[in-house]
Image 1 (spheres, rainbow, N blue to C red):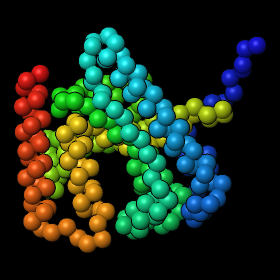
Image 2 (image 1 turned 90 degrees about the vertical axis):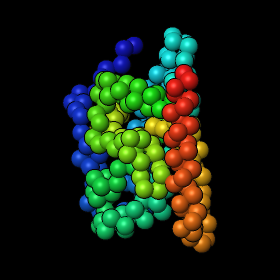
Image 3 (image 1 turned 30 degrees about the vertical axis):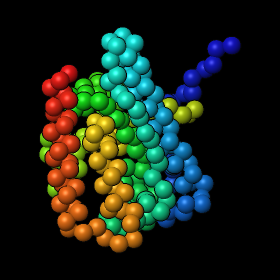
Length: 219
């Protein structure tokens, strides 16, 4: 028996579907609904990336994407970020101003692959690029290098179609190694990292960038 499509399916925003002017309560049904919607957004873009990954390997015998990581920001991290941005602790402010609640990281072999993946994402039907920052060409002062995109990903629920914001980071395996090391050193220890260690991290980032360029030249 053919299933009938629900009538009145329109592209809407999360805040139009839920009552979001109330304060955030991580134990509430509203919070669980919002986190579910973000998780669907991640699955949607992850599936598209996995298709690109397999197509590249099967059709072109090239591993364009080495691996993909996903995560949903924890309630504690969301709260800290909202406090740092001096936002009201409401669902409305959370949805509008926190762009990385849903995150996906794409790790590729070569620096040129970053831009190949970026262009493929741009060409995907329905996907909108809201913001992007190129930390590959213009690394952060810390030495951090990656390509960041905020995507509006359309998801289809039983009665509604809506856009969900997903932050995507695209980086090489070498960049990912450095970023993981920096995060462990800077954000995990109980005491602050020394200025000398910070300088060394920057120098290592430059070495990794040269390594990326040399490997790409070999290819």
